[in-house]
Image (cartoon, rainbow, N blue to C red; front, side, top):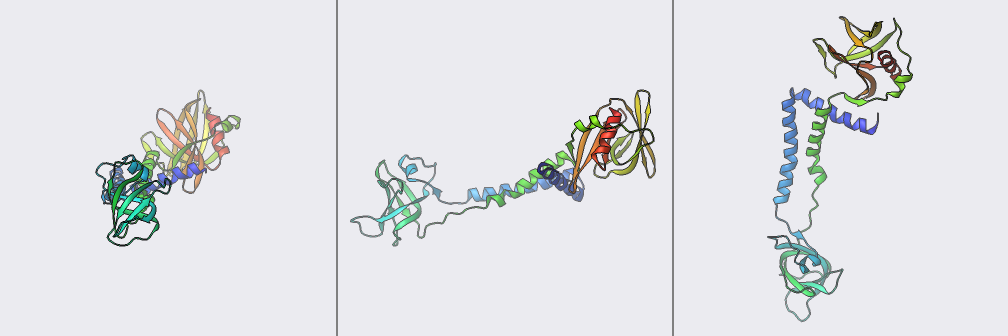
Amino acid sequence: MTPLDAGLTVAAALAHTIERRTGSRRATWWVVAGLVAVSAIWTFLIGSSARPTDLTFEDVKLDRIPAMTSWARLEGELRPLAGAGGHLYELHDTADDRLYVIVIADAPLELGHAVVTGRLSPGEATVGNIGSIEADIPAVPKRNEPFAVILLPAAIGLLVVLGMRLGYPVVRRGRSGSAVRAVPLGPGERLAVRWSGRIGSEGIPRDRPLAATLAVAPEPGLIEVSLVVADGVRTVRVRRAAPTRLIRLCRIGGCEPALEIFTQSADVLVGFEDRASRDRLAATLA
C-alpha cells in the first residue's frame, strides 16, 4: 500500500463509517456541512474582532493603509523626543533611521526596541516625521491564531466528501503487464475468492463481499465463470475479450488484488488472495 493508497483509504473509511452511523448519505452531507460551518464561524469571529493592523514605516510613508484603518501596530526603535516635555517619543524605523513617527503616551514607555499600538495619524512627509500615534498603554499583543486547528474541521469535511466519492473499499488501478504473462486457468481448477457487485438482480455491496470458490468452463466464444457460495452457485457467462479491469481493493488493513468483470447481465468485482491468481483469471478471460 502506497502513502497515496493509505490516504485515500482513510478518507473513504471515514466517510463509510459516518454514513453507516448516521444511516444515510443525506445525513452524512449534514455532518460535512456542520464541520465546514464550525471552521467558517470560527474564522468569521476572528476576522470580525477588533485588532490593530500590522503596518510598516514604508506603509505609512507611502500611505498604503487599508481603508477605515486607524488602529495600527508599528515596530521600531523608541527614543525620547528631544526638547519635549511629557511622555512624547520618537519611534524610528530600524531599516531606515530617517523615518519616524511621534508617539504620544499617557505614561512612561521603555526605550529601545518596541512595538507600539494605538491610533495612527499619517503625515504628509516622506522623510523624517511621517506621522503620529497615540499609544495604547500597554501595547496590544499580537495574537497568533491557531489556524491549523481552526481549519481542521473543514479539512475533515473535505476528506469525507472525497471518501464518499471514492467509496469503500477504494478501487485503485492494478498493473496489467503481469496478466499478459500469466498461465490461464484450466478446466477443474478452483480459486478461493471474495465477490461483490451485481449478477442478474442480485447485488452484493462492495464493503461486504461474499467468500466463494471460483471455477471456469470454456465454451465456444465465451467462458462460463462459476462462483460457488454457501447457498448455491452464481454463474457469469463472459464473452472472450470482454471488458475487464485489473485493480487493487484497498481497505484500512491493506490492499488486495482484484478483477472487475463487465457483461450485459453482471458487473462483478472479484477479490483474490494473491496477484498471481487474479492474473491467471484475467489471462483466461482475455
